[in-house]
Length: 120
Image 1: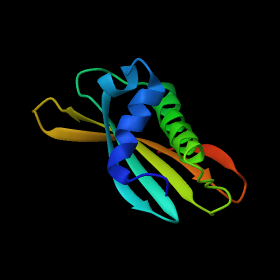
Image 2: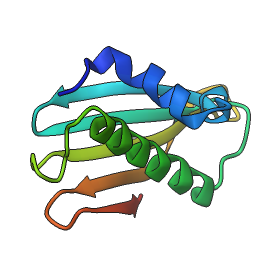
Image 3: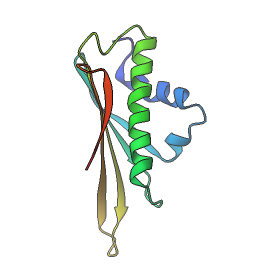
Image 4: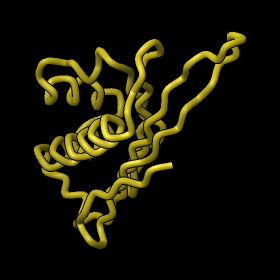
């Protein structure tokens, strides 16, 4: 791998440019290995997020991750690496109970070199 997992968020923030994606939520690296990366993006509470916005965010983060790996000389297609970005939002119900809304997962599969959205 061209860089350590803790460097990913900073690289993605630089890639996004204005940082608007990271003002709307936070990114966590859940898994980082030679055969796969799993990320979780959590939208901030307080704003209603649409399914299309969640899809654009997840596929964008997955694509940015691929771009950063490629820029470092690591081709995920050639190394059979999967990249998954889960997207969810924690909100609060009428009684104040924390509720998690799962939007879906953006998945990069090296066998067909495509990013696909899997809504939940």
